[in-house]
Length: 535
Image (tube, rainbow, N blue to C red; front, top):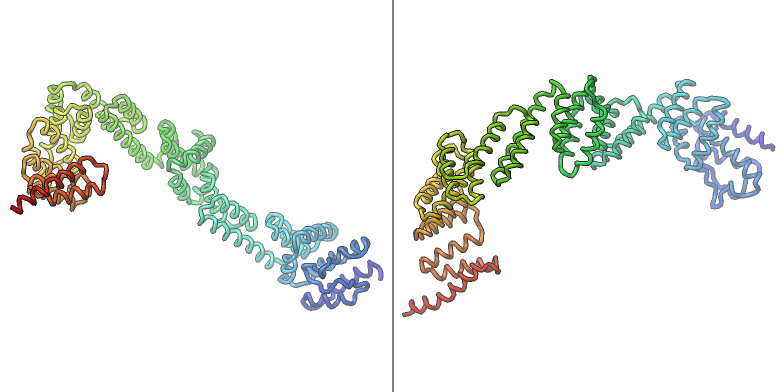
């Protein structure tokens, strides 16, 4: 039988089949073909033939002939099977077979376009993840016939769903680059899916940072939340590179004539990136570009930044870094112009820096121009510069208005006044101040220890021990407190307690010289005391 007759027989067999074509049917028919090779034991869509490949057996002419036969069998089988079987047979092909089948089907389609051939090509390209090609062939299939529309939609949406689920998994793991890639593939499979398009834009922002077009897209869809989320996740010191890249990109895309939806959000985002990186001039520029719709958040941000700069200025000034302090105020004035507290801070720093004598300190206090916060900063600065008497003068002024002081401010003022009063040998006023403070019921372990020190210095041992114990209950577990209690025990001739407390201190800090001295002294005193008791 000639080659042409064999091919015609195969084609006729497939076309005349009135029932579903199965693997077994093909196998049964192949048995009647002439020149059936002994090595061929079965036929199925995978095209496997025994242990030795059928196409690799026999002469070159036989290999060419049988290759043509197999292509015709596969093409005809696919054309006659119902869609579910047809798709299954196509998807079971290995990579080399898919490539060969695609070439064969494309060649046949160029000669005689058929709907099932275009459909088959769409299935094969979809299996390879080439969804644009898949959709192109599916469109050609639909133009030729609507018989396969249901199957086409099933396959398209199946690929879309698979890619979208992969994107969800990657997003949950924080792998936004991979999530964006899978969503892009999902869109290639089903471009009409608007929700997927927005999710793809969001994933791109999380992966690469926001650009003007992405922000415009989300603003049009009223979904700007991902921009804020990206800003929040990239606000730390370790993300400065990511912020800079996005800031440069947005700044290059924005100009003073941006009027499309989302451009104000892009300007605000750029201003926020400038703020996070300390570019106050850039922040001011893009906040202004954001316009009236963003006036409230930009004003809040300006105020927050200026507050931080003002606090930094005061801290620098309290540690005697006057030039840096004034520079911070200059920056605060750029960020949030015309603030009264910034102006007042500058005037106070200049005036207080000139007060070199005690009389000048008293004169400034007498004017009443300084509120308690400025007095606290001034006191700290005087104290760190070693001007103890002047610092004590400011501390006295603060404690005269203790009702408006915070607990921290009271504590600081008391500490400074204690240091001053100790320097002049006057502890009574400090003791009374501390008693008043602790009488409020506040749990202040530090102040309790200070009061205990004052009482110990005044030989009020029982009350000193009471406040040391209170400090311990309130959370002071320091070795220093153990040593204070050991000194009280020594003053009361309780040498056993002294030894126990000193031993605990030595156990916790073996290199603590004071602890070892107290411990040695307690052990030297115990035999003497025991001897006296024995007598």
